[in-house]
Amino acid sequence: MAESYLEWMLKVLKEAVELGGFPEEVYKYLSKPDRILIVKIPVRMDDGRLEIFEGYRVQHNNALGPYKGGIRFHPEVTLETDMALALGMTLKNSLAGIPYGGGKGAVRVDPKKLSKRELEQLSRGYARAIAPLIGDQIDIPAPDVNTNPQIMAWMVDEYSKLKGYNVPGVFTAKPPELWGNPVRIYSTGFGAVVAAKEAAERWLGGFEGKTIAIHGFGNAGQYAALWATKWGAKVVAISDTSGSVYDPEGIDVELAMKVKNETRKVINYPKGQKFPGDSDVPLYVDADILIPAAIENVITAENVDKVKAKLIVEAANGPTTPDAEKKLYERKDFVAVVPDILANAGGVIMSYLEWVENLQWYFWDEEETRNKLAAIMKRNFHRTADRWEKLKSEKDFIVTMRDAAFVLAVERVYTAMKLRGWL
Ligand code: NAD
Image (cartoon, rainbow, N blue to C red; front, side, top):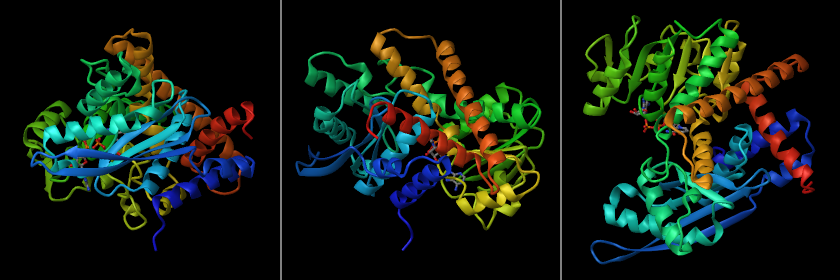
């Protein structure tokens, strides 16, 4: 049987503990969450039926600060996946250098089958069910797959009603009009490009004029493309499920975004070479930097030999399989895979900034927020790159940048736990 996501996460944790030379107790401690809440959410459906949904909130570790992580609405979620995701959040938040532990929530539901009223009732019901265990100093959820700012607005309203006063900082990624921040919509793509820019300046002699291919043109991909162009790079290939567009002269990203958002298909972009039905062209074109921004497992042992980019910056979660990654690092001209845990942390870092605003009831303007986000991403990138270079010089086997990121992530949680006397 294929290994589960939880088994895979535990393996990653174990390897990081070993590579970093941390005591085995760190693995023992972090392999189990602090607390698991299983809730039932009764919803009166539009046709009069009573439906009972099951939900979870896993609080993994709070050594560094309140538990933090998204809420997923999906028909296939399980408690085990939620536990793996919560562990992942502890490590991601640790690497991000923000004062958060890790948590994750989920409701087993296919939200596409719900009316707007049913979705609101479910969201409010879930917020009520987990209310005893969350709080702006305790556990701070946010959106994940199939949840969004409107759902956060319903949840923050429900929680505030229970408390009897407004508690804006208990959920993040709220609409900008309700205690949210306008940077949030582009924070992941923007953050990935900050990482790409820093990597190119550190290892490729600069970012301006570099060619970029982007696989996936949704939220993360579009804003990565937009900020890459604003900072002087040239986006030469983009794709979505409708196919790919390639233009070595450079794609007009704003026009591509307009076309994608109006017609839902990148392939309707009016210029360049088109490849209808072939979504993978950006993976293989001649470009300095490849940004996978669609789904997991797109660069595999089977196709990795066709990848020409020297630098891969993972905006998507898990786009490069471990076998493929190994092969990339064996290639002489290959520089690095900037791993997802580092490259796509812009969203959670933005959540942190929003929470800080909420706690103070004081809001920065868009540019100030963006600069703060960029500074944190930049610091994290170089901290990881420094550690990677050090580890590489010490070991006689291939150490990836991902390995270095996990070592740093474990180190920060471990240090906090040790200082607190937990280990
Ligand atoms: P999205 O749904 O907005 O966009 C996904 C895009 O990928 C769509 O354009 C879709 O057509 C395209 N796509 C799907 N399958 C494809 C394929 N096989 N080939 C080419 N294109 C394909 O999603 P998103 O929010 O942009 O997320 C994309 C990735 O980034 C996911 O892995 C997600 O987990 C990760 N991520 C996103 C955020 C965020 O804040 N949006 C944060 C962290 C990580």
